[in-house]
Image (cartoon, rainbow, N blue to C red; front, side, top):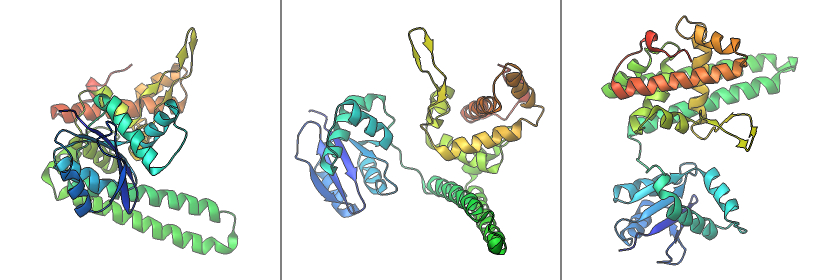
Length: 314
């Protein structure tokens, strides 16, 4: 039996579905559990379903499809946008987008990671970290906006204190959530033995490593978007830049961990070694962040704790 490759374009109220093998015409399905379940029952076993990550609107379909035994792929919208340009797509409608996703799944599924829904705790931890990041951004934006306005100084200070309290409360909720689950608590405690890794970084790393199986440290680095992207052609060797494909907040937390780690005897000499070789402070910190992430993968994989004597110096 032929495997069907199905693309789904998601919106708040409905999803548009299409099939690469033209087994059915593109059509809309209401974006609720009842309608989606009914549609999934009409599909043959073994179908592969691709859907873009669209806020939280894709989660119902992705979760139901995965629970029904289908291979589900949650796609980065940037990838499908580049794919559309590569194949010369001229129009952009819900039906065209669904057909494009179906075509992408048909040709690229073998290279994609299958979706596994997060547990309730994993979803809660992700949400708390994202909300904290948004509050940090709001605090920074408010400070810049109100800077240099003496008449609003008291209100600006009060706003900052209020946002600080909200951020502290979110951090406390995160700690409580992790403490309530022994497995998560053990994972985070192990990762926090890495010099420079605190509760927030440990929570982000642990949540990702617990949920997704990475076959190698390189795969984990690529997922995080900390992998350098070559730009070479012939004899030309272009400047390496990070791919930045993965979770931006976790990259930011790792960079902050690296900034903290440079003051320690474990990581400081490594950082100074890169600076002595002519690398900028940012380049050196990114390398350090990558090393911390590799160390985290190793500790999680082997169930060990941090040993500073095993840090590579190159």
